[in-house]
Image 1 (cartoon, helix red, strand yellow):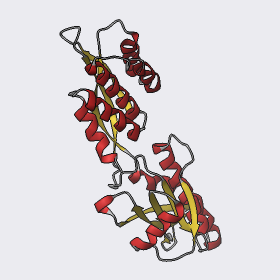
Image 2 (tube, rainbow, N blue to C red):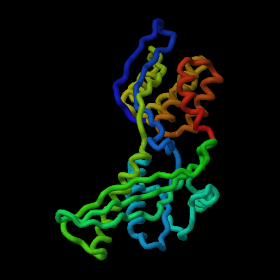
Image 3 (tube, rainbow, N blue to C red):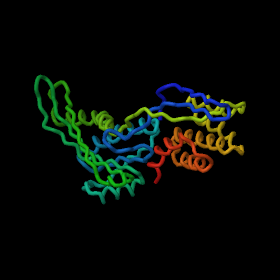
Image 4 (cartoon, rainbow, N blue to C red):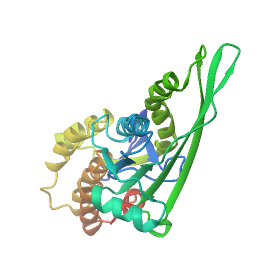
Length: 284
């Protein structure tokens, strides 16, 4: 989640009833490729013993870094692995890579296709084609190996022979990996969620709402936790729902679902259904 607008307050008509803040965020959606990578572990695999091993390593590094920047705030958590140069187009072979890498999603970089080198108008030019296989072990009914292809023209000034041309192509590999990853990066869609608030002298409601308005979810959750010691089941449910929303916004979907279940057991809230629609698909 990331912020796109400010917080708006809808005041309750009576002091004993909860008010609702409507907060707008950009919700992470599946990538253009159709694969939803949010919350999943990933690995990039390539065959090391091949003619283009250096290219594939650099490509894999650029690809992995782009995924890490988008899904993990730049933390280096996407694994890079090498395997024997075999046929990995079957589902069973990709499942084997899932088991070996212990990842939810595996990308396999195939041998690049370097088109014929052309010399014209003072340039050496060739088209570099890259093919990848992708397998998402958590895709459910869409459980299949998927193919992704791309190509780019690489040019350099001068007439370069084969020995000089190979390092030129390899030098483009990290950028090609980054560009290839663009199809797998998140897309975003505006979403709105409600936060419950009571017009009360209890500071937890006021300070929790203030922290939420600044998207400081850890601090907001700490304040809402102080509100659980109440015999009023509606107020308790509102605090529990707010905590669930804070956990969801912090990327802790499993914990958010537990808190939402508690809120629903204590008192039915209108905002609960919206959040549950986001959490239920993430149940394993």
